[in-house]
Amino acid sequence: MGAKRIYATCAGVHFFLIIVVCFGGIFPLVAEHRTILPSALDKYARDGELVATSVLGKELAGSNPVRRAIATYLHAAGSQSGYGFFAPNIPGHHKLTLELYYHDGRVEYDSPHVSGRAAALRLDSLLDRLAEPGYEPLREVIVKMLAFSVWQEHPDVKKIRAIFGSVNMPGISDFEHGKKESFQPMFSFDFSLRNEENQSTTR
Amino acid sequence: MGFLFPPETDKWLTVLRIGLGLQVAVYALFLKSDWNYLFARTGSGLVSRDLGEAIISFDSPFIPKLGWLVALGGHIGIGEETVLSVAWACLLCAGCCLLLGLFCRPAAIIAWFLHLCAAESGGLLAYGADNFMTMGLFYLMLSPLPDRYSLDHRLVKTKPKDPQLLGFWRRVLQLHLCFVYFFGGLAKCLGSGWWDGTNLWRSLTRPPFNIISPDVLIRFKYLLPVLGISICLLELGYVFFIWMKKTRSVWLVCILGMHVAIGLTMGMYLFALIMIVLNLAAFGPDFGSLSLAYRQRFHAVFTKQLTP
Image (cartoon, rainbow over the protein chains, first blue to last red):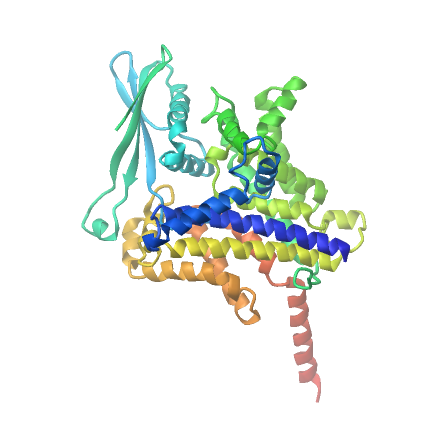
């Protein structure tokens, strides 16, 4: 009986954390007007988000053992994020185009690539994440790494211009009217690889 | 308390072990050509592993990562490339051992640990399938292994496991899946695009999931809203209808059909496979008792016909 109680308590704590993580994923969607719910619920969604964040210990200092224990457990159990895949709506598709400038004035175009389809799915998911506001501080460094991976295949390139943007796919009626996909640049970075200097511009 | 500890056989555990073994092996084989490129440090890979690991360390420095193994290898003079290759080979071996039921518990722990290391170190490149794999392997390594169909059981006659403990771990998996579909369905219901078919169109036409040509899809445009709403209701209703005896089989078949369709039409094979494995282990029919029931029915009919 004692062992059963321990198992039941552990399961209770486990599912409590999972429910909090799941609600922590849904509240920001409501608060950011990304759902069909009325904006009157924004305030409650923000409050709910704060509660979820606090329960998971994310308001505590980074070195706090409780925060670290909860985070470690959730990652180990594969439950650190909610289950809102492709929800509430389908995220946009993003593309990184690299303009390769050679010493002799030639310009070629390339993009970061991998061999297998399984890895390609992962690369696409990274590019889609880069567009999210939360990834802004990391954007330049990640784009630089992706550009560097391509530069290794073209060592005689003088400069790389990385153009990141969203690919707008036509809707059903637009497609029926013959509209094709369009590319909307979001930002670009210039990397001078010879002297390790780089400049960036955001559009 | 009785709800959490229903007596169960270990057949569901066999399904979970074999399914996850297959999943781990396929995961390793799919990433074989890109493994070192995805997880290398700055300068030789796609995105630096260091960056992914630094981001994870903000959450907690105790989350397992490939960097630990590389550092360990460094201490004994083994280079990064070799350590990564050995980690890949060990993951594949662990998957094969799980498939066969050989060294079940160590194989489950090694598979969970190595997959978790890869998923966390490549966190920037991770997606949904990784979370479900970690979740499945986490439950598998804690469950009462080995099951009676494993080689371990045949080689070393192990004692039968406590049916209530087996039932507890199956219940945990069942409850977890209910949360997965409930929250997934709820989030979808909150998006306008799932009610008018827009989201289904967008998901099937956007790269890299655009396996079916839009010219083919457009012929079924009137079906898209129906399918979109069906997906929402199927996921949201899972938490209720999967528990009822009368609706369980129908719901399970529909959910499995949905994942097969996701795999085939969007090319998300790993995601489809892990969801099918988890669903079959959690709510799949008890194949043994099913065949026993058929045998009994067949026997009853047969003897009735022979009786004058």
